Image (cartoon, rainbow, N blue to C red; front, side, top):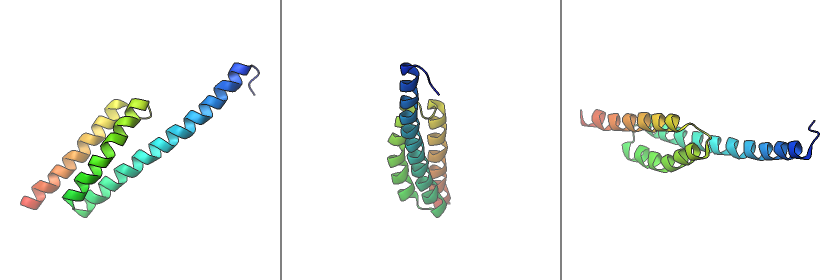
Length: 92
């Protein structure tokens, strides 16, 4: 157990931050799941809409330090490439 007032405050701050970060990470995962479900369904327009909704949330998570910026960039790139491949598959 923390002995000093500053250590007790640190514990309180860490608990609040952990809850906030966990909620943000879960929210981002939910957005990604919606995009992946739309891709799996083969619906290009709904997949694009889902990605458009997910992108700001993912970028915000990177800004807040919940995810590394390169991780977010990689995930966005891969999702958009998969959506683009849906378009190619539909034309073929």
